[in-house]
Length: 283
Image (tube, rainbow, N blue to C red):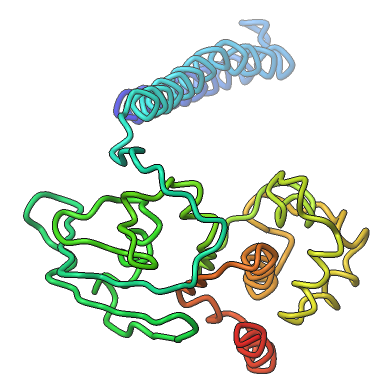
């Protein structure tokens, strides 16, 4: 970007100076056309020649900038591919269903060494119980969700589901029993059906519509052209924020999770829809 920000303005200044000098010199020639033989047409042609001469120079600057952005992007991709998984897949305990008891025992966690986000957290949630975590932004509420799903490993303490340490669970089995609805919903460039099933052939249209009825989203889906076949642009640009959140609820509820975690998931829906979602959660 530094080279581009220097090269491109310099090229533009030189081009402008060239045109300016040509107009100054050519105008004098046009005035004295009888002596010089320079006409308006000749002057205009040379101005166009200068523009054509500098066009490839400008293109070089643009291509160089594109090349630099490509190099930066490729380096990030390579670093991501070379990074090692910090979550160790060493658990073998599998559970088709869990009761839903969650216990945090003296949990300490830091994204960076010794900069603890969670300090000595003790939390016990019984099956069927609803618990709300309230705190300021950055207090660590979302970190609790990440730890429960083993997106990160804790530094100290233990987290148990049904009296089994989550590190002993097979990660796929653990996450299968936990439904998470985030405030910031990511939708893929795919149909409504594809965004709900995420490629799982076991999820039928009947299951999707049943979950949609629970959260009050069936009407808006049926109003879309094609219904479940409606193509959603990446990140759900063709849908409102509230509709995206309803789809995320359907995505979670269609699997009938035994542990449901909401991260400010009803912040963008109207009051009536929020009441309907709360009733669906109770069911």
